[in-house]
Length: 325
Ligand code: UT7
Image 1 (cartoon, helix red, strand yellow):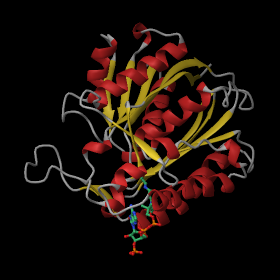
Image 2 (cartoon, helix red, strand yellow):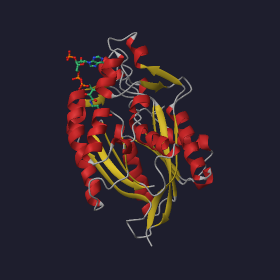
Image 3 (cartoon, helix red, strand yellow):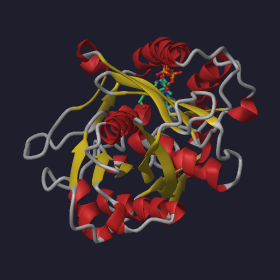
Image 4 (cartoon, protein in one colour):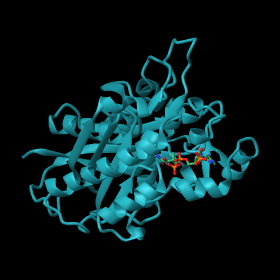
């Protein structure tokens, strides 16, 4: 019988420091009203000195393992999605591996910007199906506060820091798509022709250009609405589902207007769409697992629920995943 990847545990970590829109407006030509109206954001968490991508990723991973009732001995692989690694190498995933006390298996980082979690989930699921690993930690951990131009009101108000993680575990595929738990399908896309509408203008070792995030917001917005709509339809079609058939949308949190448009597209009432952007802002690859951790933690999303996830980010990269919890 073939294998399926079950989401056995979910966890998240947010930095202690919260910065409100009003606090940003003290030193920037912006306002709480503009930020809330255009994005839905009210505040964001900002990492302190010790809250590195590895530190936050490890805390989220520990929470996911605890939730699964699993220990470090059950972790065969760690895939950590980030655009803000602590070092060029070792990969942040290996720092997390060491922090967790995992001493075997393999670990690597994956760079797909805000789509990183969907990409990492797809890679992990493929490895579980192929029998290369039984227990895989999939982590999104981001410290965007380090790559923001804090003078650029068009970008710095949009992002926050944090980490989220899921522990995927192999299970026998029951063969019945109506009840089977786990990752049901993933759909990945990339189009490098749009690389210049959302990017970081620097790299590790470029002392002349350490790099800050640049974005043509309206251009990304236009792409997101079209490409994400196609990605959610693709997930429905691949699973033979009609509009309204999924229980929850857990979207990447980039803009409340995009999130609401996707909820409508799926035929879901607003209470079936998980929104954290108001409190977390855009935490890039961490946003989906953080939202999932919140909605599972407070009892909204339950075992057996059908959850659709979607994300779009720099690259452009985008995709969707359908999971039964
Ligand atoms: O996670 C990766 C994917 N990212 C996304 O999906 C983000 C997609 N884009 C967006 O969410 C939106 O485009 C933004 C929220 C980034 C911007 O909203 P917008 O409604 O597209 O605004 P805009 O960039 O067209 O700017 C409108 C006006 C401009 O002023 P003028 O030229 O009309 O006078 C901006 O200069 O708003 C001004 N503006 C601001 N004003 C106050 C831009 N940023 C700010 C700000 N505070 N923070």
